[in-house]
Length: 91
Length: 152
Image (cartoon, rainbow over all chains, first blue to last red; front, side, top):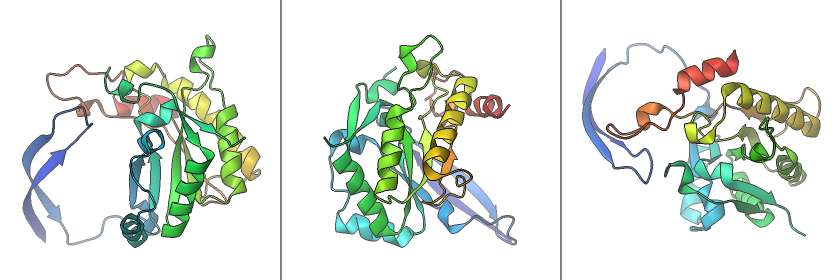
């Protein structure tokens, strides 16, 4: 069985780069499973820039609720700023 | 390059911020992969050694508060020309990180992707295809060849 659909792919490589929009067509064979990934392989990144900017509440109830629904996913905290940050212990 | 310099200046992760992040991750039932700074110590020696002392403080603190870290990553998009890393250098630094993590978590207790036995994750590479057409590529080597050299 093949399922064909068209979708608009938005690629935002970096905030300093232009938004690239392209219409592409993907054909997916859904007649058999070729591989399975474990539940934790669902992952997302929270940009490490938060540590520099503190620009939103990471314990916002709506955010926490959305993330709970993805459990046991992995939250990767990193990105460009990772290579500019040092840990500063108290005291 | 504007891309790498987007952060542009050194900053801190405070103990309070780290604890808040751990609390949030614990509350959601997720686990946490954290990208450590691969640039520390890089310019302090001709051999571009990595200084693991700050990473050690952070990892020990994370352990002390039972932060659910399932993986430690070293560096971001290290195949970017502006960063100056070679696959050999990154592989060497990553081996150092592996030893450090094993020292802190206990011998043989690294690699299961759990908070008791975290992964050591890498190399982080970016694809030169992400550079817009007409733009100047800032990628020293494409991600595939960087990773192949890293594993060699």
